[in-house]
Length: 130
Length: 130
DNA sequence: CTTGACCTTCCCACATTGGGAAGACCCATC
DNA sequence: GATGGGTCTTCCCAATGTGGGAAGGTCAAG
Image (cartoon, chains in turn red, yellow, purple, brown):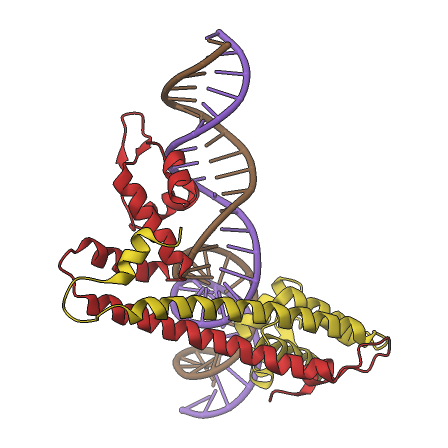
């Protein structure tokens, strides 16, 4: 099948498929006319990639996951270790975003929010967080 | 003062100061020799920007915040509204990261993590999340 | 043969920060 | 006055991931 069909079948845009190929994440056969040609197995790989992206794995992680996926004799410990490291990274980032949100919400709570100019939020930005 | 001193005094790198100028967030006087020249007020602006970045405001938001900051007669409601919208965005992102982390952690929990190849994480990536 | 849908490559954009090169400059010391 | 170290200038490139769009080739149906 052509790239469009592979895109539709995998949920990965044609743009991204070409990009993944450009960075060496995947490969593709070429037809005499230069068109990329994909089989069902390729679509499965693309789906794998998309699911991993859905789980916010960086592409470099996905590169390793693909290698592990293709290696029938891999140790599941390797996969688990990657997954847990990724979970930790996600949670760290989520917590830090939440912390920032909390402190900003706190600031906003003390802002009258009417048509007077006085605003602790701007005051904090001006001088605070030293 | 020169850019280096302004950078040291504000906590914004010289690189970033030039960048902020390039995108029109700030301006700078030029000396005859071409060097940028900053005064204490400029450093205050840079500090304002850095604090807003610490609170994860996007630069476009900072552009508006700066305008509000400079407008002595602004209504605090405008600031509060922006802040709360930003808080909501942060919390949405934090929650979605946490949700992804949760589901991945859940998957990892069912992975033996030993030297056997069987791994539900890969299986899920392969077929799941449809 | 024309038309439209699809494919190709290539460049550009987003947002943010940093690295580094090449050249100009300033100040102080010899 | 020259030499040198530090600072400044601009310009290009990098990362991340995704998309837009142009210019041109290809294919199938009418």
